[in-house]
Amino acid sequence: MTFGILKARFRRASPASTRPSAAGGSVSPASNQARVIGSVAAKRSQHLPEPTRKSGHEPQAAASHQQAQPPAAKPQHDRAAAAEPPASFPELPKPGQIEASGPPALETGGILTIDLAAIVKNWKAIANRVVPADCAAVVKADAYGCGIDKVAMALARAGCTTFFVAHLTEARRVRAAVAAVAPDAAIYVLNGLPPGTAPIFAEINARPVIGSLAEFVEWDAFRTATSWGGGAALHFDTGMNRLGFALEEAPHFTARAKMPNHGISLVMSHLACADTPSHPLNAKQIEAFRDLRFMFRGTPTSLANSSGIFLGPATHCDLVRPGAALFGVNPTPATVNLMEPVITLKARIVQVRDVARGEAVGYGAAWTAPRTSRIAIVSVGYGDGYPRAADGARPGSKGSSALAERIAKSAAFALIAGQRCPMAGRVSMDLMAFDVTRLSDEEVRRGAYAVLIGDDITVDDLALWSGTIGYEVLTSLGRRYRREWKW
Image (tube, rainbow, N blue to C red; front, side, top):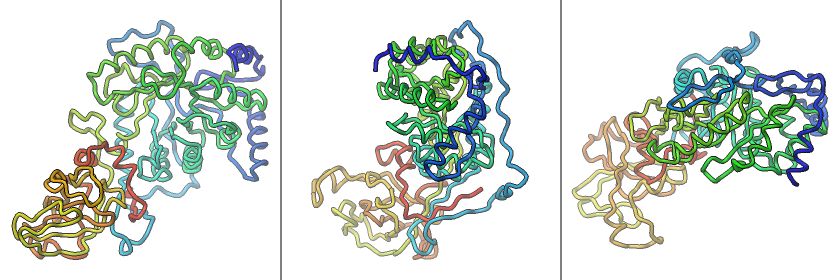
């Protein structure tokens, strides 16, 4: 496809009976919307909700932070009101109530507890921080391992009306989860428009984040052929070199953004180094996105991820996109974590054993008892997503007896009876060992639990011990746990 063909599409007349949307564009009449969705639904033999006619977020004037703002003011809209469940909707769970899934506690080795109230508190704290911008929620990868259905529902009840996911299957789950509370929620799919999926986007009323000409042409052709009024985000690459249009392509879309029924509900980019505030790429990307905002004035814009929010108002624009911060990961690694912890992971102690001085524990004999010791064996391992690298062992082939592996010492510990107990030896697939020599027989026993994450151990602590990031720790949490959601 050439830009000549693309521009020809831009010149097509829009239906005369369109109306402005809250996102700065416009949408087709309700009858056209219903016809398109009904057609898609008939093909898939499903009953589907009527598509939304309103953006999940309302544009606001962005705050300034040592940056000049575009001279043309954006249209002002009322902030989206907090969603309220209809009268017929089941009552909210009471504080402290537990919902569970997975195997019974007695049939598995660990219990993962997710504090939904803490997630909501984190979202509200960020939302208040970025006023007058709006606050979305990134719930990709099963809401960072915390359960996309329950997390999306909890956030929608709290007033969140814009969600970001990676794939269409996640968008479908979010739509189902929030349908009763926030039926007009905007759901953006970050990984774009896979070939042939435009009808599915219409079916579930999701919005692709478009970053290539091929995607845009396919999306635009579907909208033209069906009169579907669904929106999309345009993603521009400002320095990450991962997804998005080149900045030089932006002028080809500015004329489109001024047309009725243009369908561009958001212009966005992504910060590459926001967790390192002093990195020079931050200023470069902020400046580049400022120019984009000027070109697309009147269309909502979004730049800041979790860490980007804390770089200051210059990144807030009209909409911020927190993800990991909602789930307790520190968005400002060099300073104190302002987020509430969200998860607790406990593993059952299956055996307590004595180990003589000089005896080794675990694979590779990587830990040797410095004295007569008592060791607690707990029933979680790397098969459950606990990082094997947390044991301090250096990479090597199975059976290797390299000195670097044998003398490696881990900083990891568990909390048993409220006391820090250091890891002893390597993490196995289903088991780990901790030194409980300092504890009494009454304090550590078969059937009790060791805390692996929670209380004095954060997700970021485990990431540090493992040479990774909190994002990976959360999204690696295994499916063998009993999961309990606390309201």
